[in-house]
Image 1 (cartoon, rainbow, N blue to C red):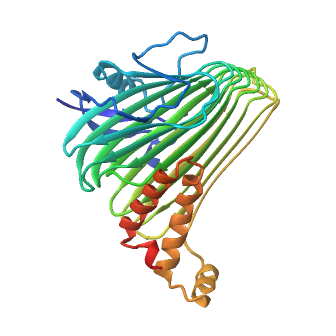
Image 2: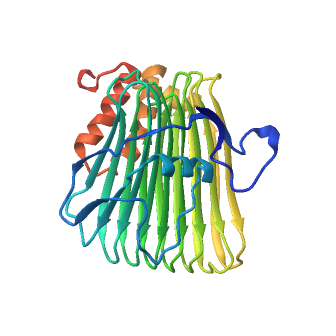
Image 3: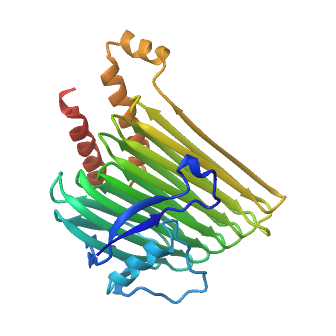
Length: 361
């Protein structure tokens, strides 16, 4: 059964004519569960089935909206819980590979116990580069006091695949989460993160790199809520739109009353390589506290004549210059992922998009 559903609602409504308050998609309400493949489980990680944990932290909030999140939770019958204890020497690697024509969902919990440190890599891909269907991924991350965690998500789906992808986190006292996201594949992608900085001195950083080509539609919704004192967030989004693609960006820093001494920084940069490509952006700062410091910005532009002249002077034509700069935006995020094999997969996927081979350059 198909149902129209609002996805990625903006934190604070803006003018309706901008058509940026949310995305509307048609969703199959009967999803099968894809629990994924645990490619590498390092020492210090325990894997169990389930969708709930015992914690003193608040439940996370969902950027995709409660309706979509509840759909995933209801259809993911078992779910998986990854509990991290101590300091991981190697990253936990999880792969979610989809067949053509699937309608599936995944529910994951990553629980970093007090004082633990680790890295998690989640890769979404399709067996067929032109695969279609839909996947819905819900990842809940709990960081107990004094824990540090890097979570990386890489999306390399087939060209006709739709996806809903949520990463919702809660940080305790002096906890730090670093989120890395690479978006390359798919047809219509709704992705976002929501982080609650609950404990004092907690931190959240995010780096997202993306490339939208052909008629891809990428809809993003990113929110960090500061509740603890002296909390800090840094949100960086950098990518390229080309051909007839569309990119929507919602980014919110919410400074609630009581988060005195907190700081936030939000920056989105978009390189537009086509007059037919569309970018809509809404960077937002909400202030309910006086003693805070927050900045935001969003830029969009094409290659300037000065940049093209520089490349031409070095024997690089416009098409190659556009490819190099687009790849550089992805690479700046990909190099933060602590696995060379997955970095190579990202590079190979990029080369397929551009029909190039770096080994021949």
